[in-house]
Length: 195
Image (tube, rainbow, N blue to C red; front, side, top):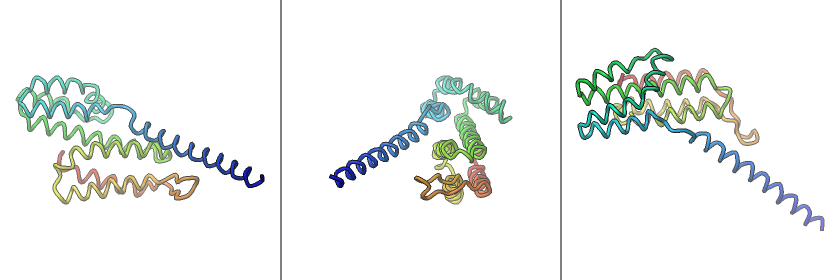
């Protein structure tokens, strides 16, 4: 009888533990996946329009990013509205694409800045680094081999530098602000060729 009670208690503990792990994992996933990325969606629409020389559709897609352009101007003092308007007026697909590359770079920088400010909150920092990786993937094919390798190594270094809360303390590692800053600078240097 005692063995049966012990087995019941053990099963209950395992069920509770499994429930905690599953709910934590699903919470982390839903938090990381929450929300659309207007710049990524807008860039895709712009690139599709440029592929068929439809500058009217490209302008509509750019207009849909007005809030993002305004944010970059007001919060980061980066004016990309003016060169974009000029590129669209000239119907210069290469210039439009180059401005969108700059927007993507600014989004990477913005997310990394946010992660750096939130190194004390692992979940927030991780989501911001993962989001910056989504943007990085868009421009990675445009980098030369050396900068592509540097960017790949640096984004992994940034992710490692945010630390790890571990599972019940096992595998716990504190955030390393100095390593984060170093890897962030290497990443920004690698993508800087597209500015």
